[in-house]
Length: 599
Image (cartoon, rainbow, N blue to C red; front, side):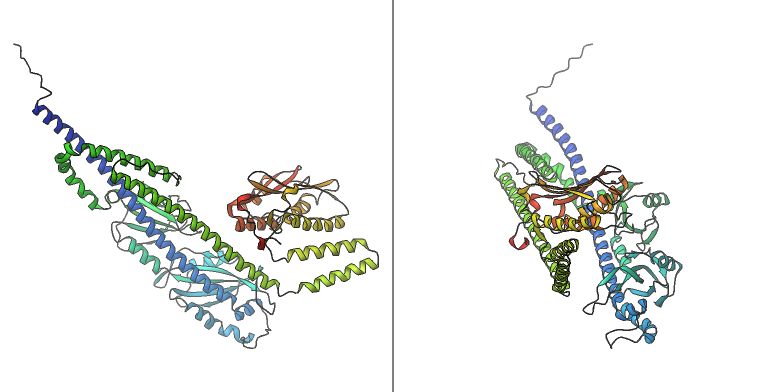
């Protein structure tokens, strides 16, 4: 029996309707799946942005509290009575100061007054360099606090303890070194060479607990962990997380800058390090909550199939054009995200699309303009701060009358001329020139002036070591009038003599070079001395303190960074027994040439 099956007529209305329905259903399904994934990605990004904002708010409040407490601790350390007690000074030019025999009795009251400057402060301690402890105690001592006091007693910078319980409070401790003040009769500058004690203040962690509770009001869990991964604080009333997930959180290595994310065991974790001690703030939520962070964004998916079925036949050209426009906009945004902020979106044919493209291009131009203005404003503010710092330095320098030294050097020079002692005459002349140069008010000088200072410095060293060194100058005369940071050359020459050629008995050579290329300007000092090993070069390159204790190179790097930013730097090439070559480079676009900056 043969069954004849009729082939459907492609031009029939029924076939076209079925075909249209099949296409519409397939389009609805595909569009629904794609839209759902887009909504999930958008919700994840929005949730991650919310987490970053909440973590930043927590971090800002923590840093504000630490800065305020550290300011109180510094003020406490600067107190004249505390300075006298810790240094054992019995006399003072001020009669209003507390007598020495009463200072210990009033120390508790004095510390108490400082703790009243902030409601979150609890107990306070001041430990002298002789380990004698002065304290204002209300809630009693804890083992963790004593251990922190022992560990931070010799620290040269501020330290922060882990959170511990003291009385009815959860708190942490801050320590700040107390430096000796040097009496110059006019003011009391700090001496960073002698630490006379340590101040330790305990701070209630209630403000951090409030922030954790605020973060955990929804489906989120918030934890504050120490560097070892131990939970110091957690939000009250939050759901418990399994021990296996807590183990993953403890072992999670979070980068120092920015917020990291991690997914494990059906949970999403957002975390960030909030201080140098390795404290980590972690916000955890179930991944489904992160995927559907805003349920309202899913509502339109329910009406999309019906709307698409009704208008599919009429809206295809519009939808096709819209799809092309969205694709073009996505590609444009990807170019912007890759760093090409100057990219412009192609103008579309349709009126509305053209308006969006033109609006987006206008917005990016305004953003670029605002960024340029922001950079200009930041540069101006930095210069203003630099000028303020320069004014402070000049105020300090003005306390010493350099004319007395100049006259003294001139007298020594005249005596040397009378007795025909040429070496003393040359030494005093060179030293007077260096002193006059070092007390100049300008931070920026010409290369020619910097080289003159170097020649005077080398004159002194040559007389000292009886022509032990031979100096070679290779200077591009076109660079003599370039502006350069004052005393940028001297640390390099001094390092070459002291560390490179001091142990060499003869045939020491130092080459001083000034040259340029199209983009940069270079100051270079090379010697044939003993050289340095890789570890010493690494320490100097990264800014760590060298074993020799010299800080001149580190100070030079800091000054270059503060004045030029990333537009300048220092490179070092050296091998044991083969000499050392140190080069300061400055990008020409970073050199600011101003009449008031060049002496």
